[in-house]
Image (cartoon, rainbow, N blue to C red; front, top):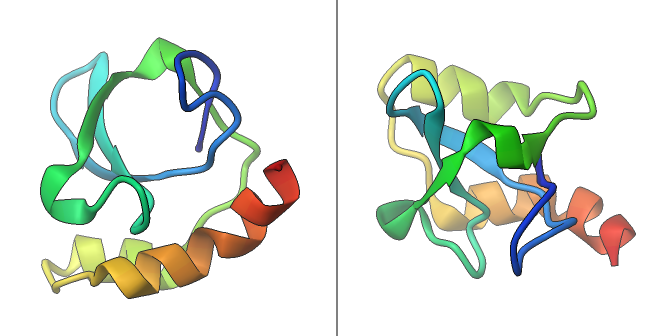
Length: 82
């Protein structure tokens, strides 16, 4: 997912938690760490259809995801967005 609005516009994130129908917590492992995931309105997020399978599997199974893993997985997307 990427941010369509706000100061972080164009930056890619992973959805860490679905809080409600219209709110999610997002993190990128760099500026926005998992422990301080940002609460964001889903209408301000866009998707390009890509998924991070290793991160998704760990979250689904309740395993701990480290900031370094998340940063590494998103680095390609965020480097291309600059």
